[in-house]
Image 1: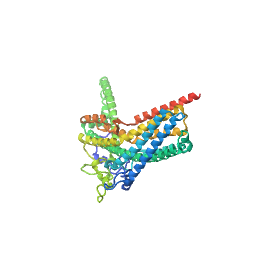
Image 2: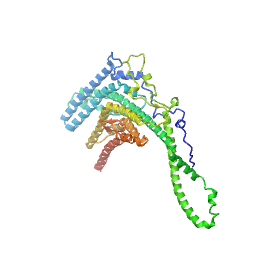
Image 3: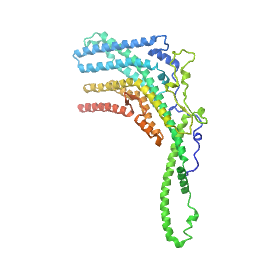
Image 4: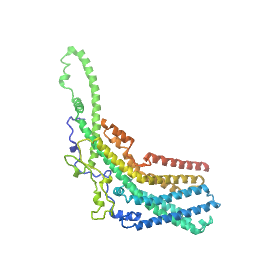
Length: 507
C-alpha cells in the first residue's frame, strides 16, 4: 500500500470528460402537446379563453348525475333495509352512508382538482413522462391495474343488486336496485378517471422534485470535492503523507550497524533502541490509521467523482468554469409555439422553478448564499405542490383506512369470503403505492443536511436544514415510510387478531 505525496490534480481533470445518462437525475421528455390537449378537453380546462370546454362540462355533469343517483338510491335502499327484519341496523346504516358520501365527494373533488392542475403552468411543466418505478414497473401502471382490479371485483361481487329479488326483500320495486347498480358503475368509472389523472400529476411532480433534490445533492458532493482538494494541499496533509512514506521504506544500514561498532555502549544502546522502538511502534500505529483514513477518503472521493460526473454533460464542460441554469429538455420549445395564441397553451418558463439544473464544473466551494438560495427554491416548489395535493391525498388515506376498519368490524360477526379479503387487502396495498412518490421526495430531502460539507461557517445552515428539511407535507405532517408502515401494521395486527379469535372459537 503506497501513499504518494504528489499534489492532487485539478478538479476539472478528475471529472470524466464524457456524458453519463442516468435516470435518477435526468428529466424525461415533457407531456406531448396533443395529449395535454385531449386531457384538457376531458377535464374541462380551457384551451381557448373564447371557447367553453363543452366536453369537459358534459362529463362533469354526468359525474354529478351518476353520483346523485347513487347516493339517493343507496340512502333509500338501506333505509328500507333498516326498517325490514334483516340484521342491518342503524349503526351499519350510518357507516355505509358516510362511506358512500366520502366516495361521492372525492369523485367530484377529483374532477375539480384535475381541471385546476391541468390548467396550471407549473404542474403542466412538471408533468413529464417519468415517475417512480417499483420492480422496474412504472408506479402509475401498477396503480391503474390495482384500481381497475378492485373496481371490477367490487362490481362483480355486488351484481346481486341488479336482481329483482334483492329489492323485493326490503319491500322496494326492482327498478330502485337497477338504478343503484347502473349509477354505481357509472360514477365509479368517472371517479377513477379523475383521480387517476391526479395520481399521474402527483407521481410525475414528485419525481421531478426528487430529481431536483438529487441534483442539489450532487452539487453538494461537488462542493465537498472542492473542499477535499483544498484540504489535500494543506501542510498538515503533506506532512502526514511524508510520515507515511518514511515508514514505508526499511531502515538504513548505517542505523543497523551503529550498535555493532560500539560494543562498550551496548547497554545504553539497548535502552535507547527500546525507547525508539516503542516510539516507532506508536508512530507506526498512527501512520496505519492515517493510511486507512487516506484510503477511505480516496474511496469516498472516487464515489463523489462518479456521482458529480452526472451533472456535467459533455457540452457544458468549459473553462473558465461558470454556473448556468437551463432546462435539460428545452421545455419552453417543446410546449410553446411562437405563432400560437398566448392563451392557447399554458406558457412555461424557468420562472416556474420546475426545471432541472445543469452545473458547469467549478473549482470553488458554494457560498452560504448559493446553498440557501437553492434550498429555498426547492422548498418553495415542494410547498406549492403540497398545498395543491395535500387535501386530495389526505382524503384518500382517511378513506382507505376507514374502508379497512369497517371491514374488520364487519368480520366480527360475519364470515370472511375470498372476495371480501381481496376487497380488504387491495386498498391497503394501494395506500403505500399512492404515497410512494411523496415518501421518496421526503426521504431524499432528509439527506440534504447531511450532504452539506460541515465547515464552521455553515453550522447554522446545517442546523436550519435539519429543523426545516425539504419535505412534502400534509397539513404540516411529514409523510414518510415509517408512518405508512405503522398504519398498515396496525390494521394487519387487527386482522391477525380477528383470525386468531376465529380459530379459537372454532376449537
